[in-house]
Length: 513
Image (cartoon, rainbow, N blue to C red; front, top):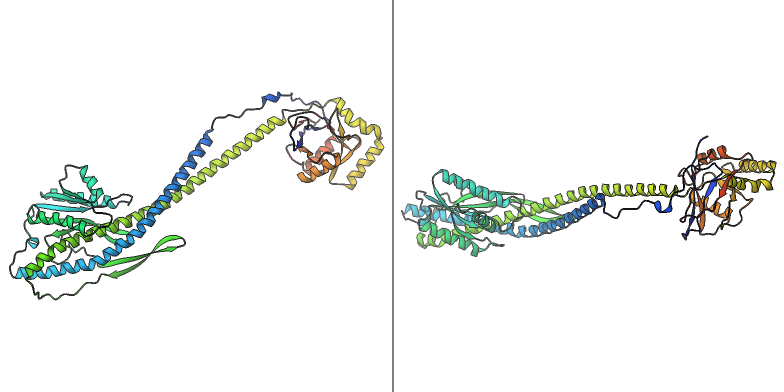
C-alpha cells in the first residue's frame, strides 16, 4: 500500500497549550517516536559570515554615496570657478599679445639705432632659470604631474647640454615636490594664490628681473599649463627673457605658442546634469605699422613697458594654469562621480544578491524548523480511536443508509469528498458526533477555513487547517486519490479529532496503509 502524509494544524488567534489538537485519518501506528518538546534546535546568537558581509557591503555603499556627494559638490564648485578663470584668460590675451607686438616694434627701432637694452640682449647661455607654475591643490587628475614631468624633462635636457639651471617654483604642489628633492637648486618658493592678481605676478617678475639683469642667469623660461579648452590643456615652455625677436610668445625652439583660436564655453544644465556649450572664436589682435612714431624716447618707453611685459606674461601664465587646473578638477570630479555611481550600482547588486541568498537561507531554515516542529508532535492512532471514529456513526446508521448517503453526496457534489469527523477522547470542542461534513476537494485557504469552521461550529477565532503532503489545501487530484485509497466500505472518509495538547498547534504524520 502507498503511504501518504497527512498533517493537520489547529490555529488560534490566542496561542495556548489547550487550544491545539490534531485531525488524523484512520491508520496504523506511526513508526516515528514522540520527541522531547525541549529538543527544538537552538539558534546561534553569533553573527553569521553572510550578515557580516552584508554589513560591510552596506558600509561600503554608504561610503561610496558620501564620496559621490563630495565629488559632485567639488565638480559644481570647479565648474563655477573655471568660468571666471576662463574669462580672465580670454580677456587678458589681447592685451598681452598687443604689448608684445609693441615691444617688438620698439626693439626693432632700437636695434636700428644701435641702442643696447639689457632685457632684449641675447648673450651666450650658461645658466637658465626655469619658472615652474603648478597648482596649490590636488584632486585635479594629472594636472600637476604633467607640468612637473615637463620640468624634469627640461632639467635633464639642460644637464645633457652642460648648462647650469635654477628653479623658481610657483604653487604649493611644485614647492612640495622640489622641497623633497634637495639636489634640484631652487632660487625661490612662491604661491600662486586662489585667484592670481598682479601682486602675485609682480613677486615672480621682480625675482626674474633681478636674476636676468644681474646676469646670474642668461635665459628665463616659463613652464606652465596652457589652457586650450575645457577638456584639453597642454604643458608648454616658452622663453620669457630675453625678449623674443619675433614679437611673439615662443617656445625654446622659437616657435610661437600663442593660441590661434580661443574657446569660450557656457555652463548650462541638461536633464538635471551639468553640460557645456562651446563657441570658438579667434583672438582679436591690433594691426600695427612696421614703423611707429613715438613722441617720447624709445628707450624710456621700453624701460616703462618691459616691467609691464614681464608682469603681464607671468600673470597670463598664472591665469591659464589656474583655468587648466579647475578644468582638470571638474573633469576629474565628473569621472569620479561617474565611477562612484557605477561602483554603487555594482555593490548594490552584490548586496541584493547576498541579501536574497540570506533570506532564502532563513526561509529554508524556517522550513527545516517547521519540519522538525511538525514531526515533534506525532499522534499515534490506535485501533480504539479508529473504532471510535467509525462506531459512533456506524452504530446510528446501517450500511445501506450510509452508502446511499455517500453516493448521494458524491453525485450531487462531484468536487467534494464525504468526510466524517468524530471526537476521540476528551476535548473542548462541542459535540461533533454523528456529523457529516462535505470537505471541498480543491478550495482556497479562506474557503476551506470557512467551510470547516461553519460545519464544526467552532468559535470565530479558531479554525482547522488540513495539510496533505505539505499542501494547503490539498489539490482535487490529491484529495480524490486519498479518498479513493482510504475510504470506508460505506463510501465515507473518516477523520478523528484526537484532542492532543501541544504548543498551540499539532500535527500528525500518519503512514496510511
